[in-house]
Length: 489
Image (cartoon, rainbow, N blue to C red; front, side, top):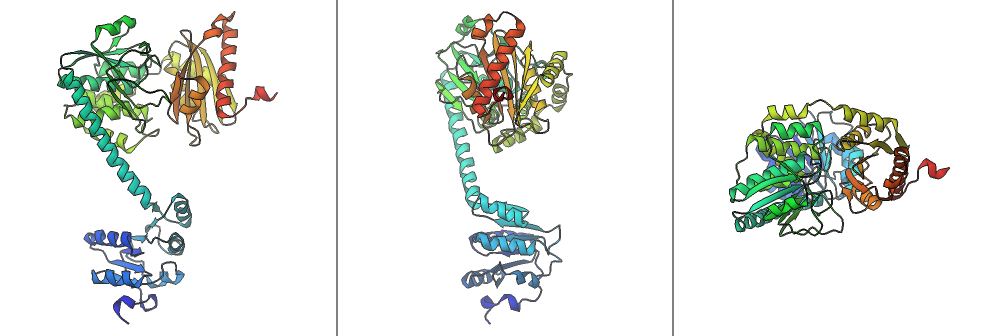
């Protein structure tokens, strides 16, 4: 029998380090790359021409049906490291995985190829340790390249804008009650602008209430100026809006105000951000990720303070890389980590919890209403709205809860913070549907600011809080397609 015609029946206990089942384009490519490991590579394929090609290229290839359950009898598993099931036939791959899984040791990895997500699930159920989908890998590679091109294109445009505006005074506006992502991003734009001779000031309205945010600003010496009125904006030649993109939505910028720069990662539905330079990317987990890419592209020196600030901004907005995290966020963090002052970061991360935050958390627990897997809680009048997301995060850990909505009253407004770990729900869309254009966010984290309006005429505080609670709960549950227990009575 010619070499390429050698059948499974003639094989007597082969001793592969790597066993490749399926010698097509992918199997052949994997075999060639594995040569450098100097381990015995054995390839099986049902196609005679493929086997002949592999043998001509120096591989130990054999003719055989990879779905045949007797194939396992031809293998000595002593030296086996991995079984790679790489044919283009999903059903054959599933059978092959099912045949080999019971007979190989726990230390042997089985990897497999699938044509789509459903077949991937079947291969995992059959026992594969790792399953890849070639079309998905190709699309991810293309998207990563396009993202890189988008970053380069946007970076060049931002550099041109700054170059054209040398010598101006730029006001960098953060959203109200800014968080570490907004603050660090504003700090980064300030450093970038210096390279182009543009003077800047970081502006914010509201309060820096969260203890960690106060420590963050103080320890990293980030210069910030509080807005005292809309006239403040007239002191600047141009305005940049960071981590927000619509004037008047979670910021004190007058609606219709002309903007020079917008950089954000939040979606605002059908509202179109309008500025001379706009970079809104909802496919990353933080604005700090976008600014980090700019720093790299423009070759701006990154101080240990700035690196620490941006790293902390990425970590907080992605909930330590557990929420809305993409490969771009990981890449930015990888760049920033060795440059950061980790002693400063440790001090930022370990401040004590304020008494008010503890009170809000206690109120949220006591006042909770559970409808299905949703937990809603009215914490009443608050002085620090940063306590709301902390309570929402904490209560999301309760057993049986997949969505939390915590709300309170401050300065003639109702503030709502929501968290979600149900992949079927896009929380930002739900919040926008429930509370309008001053609401929104990501699939797993969102917020809203609602004017008290007619509620402010309530005769006493208890009545006001009751009216607010009924309205918020009803509107949110309607947007979720649910009803409260009160509605059922």
